[in-house]
Amino acid sequence: MLEGFYNMPNDIWTKVHWESNGYYGCSDGRDEDIDRHDTWFRFLVKQLFEKPGKQFPQDYDYSWDKLGFFTTWKKSGRKCMLCLDCPDDLVKGMRKSLDTASPDHFIVDPYAFHQVAIRGIVNLYDKSIWRIRDVVRTVEKTRPKTRKPEVDYDHLHEAARHVIHSTETLQVSTQLLEQIILRHKDRLNCLGNIPEEEKVCMRQVGDNLMFYYGMIHAFKCRSESMQARHQNEIQLAFNTVAQYHSHVAAIDSAAMKVIAALTAAFLPATFVSAIFSMSFFNNGGDNGTSAGGADGAGGGDEGWSLSDKFWIYWAFAVPLTVATIILLAFSKQIMRRLGMV
Image (cartoon, rainbow, N blue to C red; front, side, top):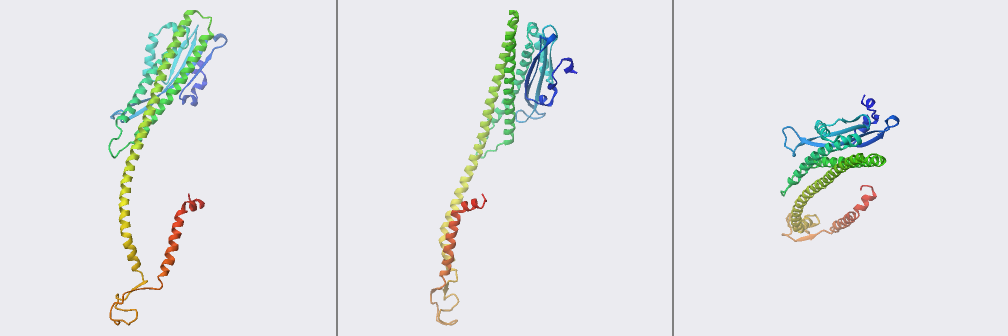
């Protein structure tokens, strides 16, 4: 119905355009509508707000303002602007601006509507950017300062998502406004034979558009700065936690060194006891026998004696020890050759 009455392009209602984060298009009339000029554009703004019963900015929710516009202007005919899916506050503010605006601008310049719409969009971005700034500032104020940091990574990354979205929409908005300003300048240059009074009005509209472009560009710079600040907080949180775990690991390492020192201190005695507990050694006093007598004979302890098979222990122990050392030395190459790493 609307597209037929206002001769709107059908692409505005497609899913691609309706889910876009911004666009701008325009067309000039032909034949009997030679002085007609239509535009359609869209901006996107993300707003954070308090949850019922919760405290902002520790806990919050968000919504998207999807601002669609269509303007049609004919010097000798209809001049109007349609707001598509815009919030009520924006529409009310635009109506007030239209009531107080100079009618001369709308008579000679189709982009007089745009300065009113973009003024309202600037106010929405101002509200959005300061809300997101409150979230980032809260993160900076509540960074962990204890020896054992407790970091809410979910909150950090949720806030980062909103900051990134803010930067994205502002980058798109600055590009859209550049296109609008460029098209307005082209139109002013093409209409070189219009009266000077009309040129003055069109230049004033262009100056207003440039002013609002500067505002949105400033918001974009602030959003990029907040994104860098928030990324710095995330990096600081990671480094703080890593430093704490490194400190804990150093304490554990010191404890392991103590255990290793104690083990090394008792290792010689353990080795000696293991050697003398083997059957390679015979002690005649253990069971009252001697090397050359019967049970109960021989008259006592004949001392220590070494078995002639003691070499078997070294024959197995030395090659196994050497093989183990070689295997450990070349373990990485062997595992890589077998495809295990």
